[in-house]
Amino acid sequence: MKLIKIATCNLNQWAMDFDGNLKRIKASIQEAKQKGAVLRVGPELEVTGYGCEDHFLEPDTCTHAWECLQDILLSGLTNGILCSVGMPVVYCGVRYNCSVLCYNGQILLIRPKLYLANDGNYRELRWFSAWKNPQQLEELQLPYTVAEAIKQTIAPFGDACLTFLDTSLGIETCEELFTPLSPHIALALRGVEIFINGSGSHHQLRKLHKRLELIRAATGRVGGVYLYANQQGCDGGRLYYDGCACIAVNGDVVAQGSQFSLRDVEVLTACVDLDTVASYRGAISSLREQASQQPPLPSVKVNAYLSGVDEKYTYFPSFPIEVKYHLPEEEIAFGPACWLWDYLRRSGATGFLLPLSGGADSSSVAAIVGCMCQLVVRAVLEGDDQVQSDALRIGQYDDDSLPDDPKEFASRIFQTVYMGSENSSENTKRRAECLANQIGASHINLKIDGVVSSLLSLFQLVTGKVPRFKVDGGTNAENLALQNIQARLRMVIAFFLASLMPWVRKKPGFLLVLGSANVDEALRGYLTKYDCSSADINPIGGISKTDLRKFLRWAAQNLGYTALAEIEAAPPTAELEPIRTDYEQVDTIEFQIVDFLVCVCLSLGVAHKGGWRSWRRFE
Image 1: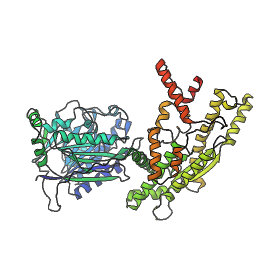
Image 2 (image 1 turned 135 degrees about the vertical axis):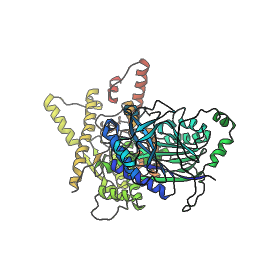
Image 3 (image 1 turned 90 degrees about the vertical axis):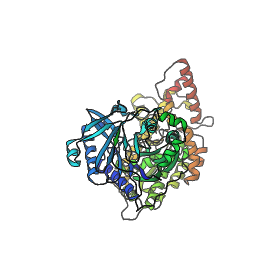
Image 4 (image 1 turned 180 degrees about the vertical axis):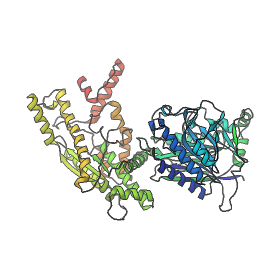
């Protein structure tokens, strides 16, 4: 058997955090070496962080990336292990997204990305250019300080593979796996056995199924070993990169990392018999015929063996495993929860404040924060040093005692506020208070009627008029204004409390205000401007109402927040209009009105640009 021990990883990299990113890269290489691996693959743009955005346009970003790479090469960590490091590189005045292949303190190949991600959440063409010379190899003059330090003046640059004495290795980067004609096909037909992919793929509901199926299909069609590495964490932006690094061999997954984790560095390894790749390919007649017609590809020859047995380790080929997929409800719980923790520990804030109405949306956000507290305490009890340090700092513990109770931890970092009015019901107030108690949040009940009355008095003083709700004979304009002023006052009160509640509790810092408007409301325009749509961050801004209701039912059983079952079953209402015996404001009815009017306007070719309450003029 031709055995080789290989490693890939999930790294929680921060945009522009060169020192921290370098520390985590080194830790991953060190752990891979300790496990006996001779190949380590890192995520896309791991040196700088993926989400640097327009900082990529600054020359210093590339300069600091080279300084980090120089540190890695001089550290001796790449001795005896081939490392793929993701970073931006400028070549002939053009900036490229590159994988840098390093071995024994030298740069073997700099491979630029061929196809850039430029749709959905991605804007790579704003900062990078794709390499337009496929299967062409050129030479890059290394920066002077790097060249002097590592005693290497030039490095191969372009689309090529590495050819060792016993195997060959090809590179893909993130989006290239998703393209119709992925590079691994031509590489495999030319005999390349190992494919590596450093990626920066964000979390999206049900997206992991597609990603893993593409990886399995890549090696299932042409054989080979595929190593996939990914970013993990929020990276300082609004996306969450969900890790799930994996290793696949001939269509089977042999190693899979976690999709949602608070760990900053996660390395997984597998032992692969490269003879099985040759055997697999040799059994497919059509593959052999196409391979015999494949033109040569440029390659960098390396006078070394990757395979071999180190007597310090026991080698056995890794067996296929069953791929683990989370339910969509679990993804809603764990993905935003991990992102919230990452954002909180980087922001300098000491917790979150949530206006909790007792409805489905704000209760979903509360449950996600509760899930975050459970994940943090679990990681603390498992001995994660970084999580322990962050939890002690954010929770502001006076002694060295570690948080061991999610509810107690929530009481320190999570403030909920029920802001009722004369239009609010006792049921929503009770449901909000019950949920807050089950999570462990510090909860406040307050009435906003006095503030509303003050503004109405001011309006009457200025205009001499008193607006009325529609159920009391008012016009649509009066009705809309009276609803909006309640919602917008809640937004102002929420930010005011977020600034001062730590001070009230004799603690430093501030709280981040959480929003609770789901994607269906945003798409329909069914939201009140400057209310639940206005916040520091909104964990459910990309989740549909349907998925949120499924999540509430799941969370009631699996997170221990039984109040969510009653909240999910209750009819949704904004509680902004007076309740009468013959009238009650129900969101689902208004949703249906909005949907109907959207269809009417679309059929008439009418474009609507206003918020949802503008539809009321059509009633």
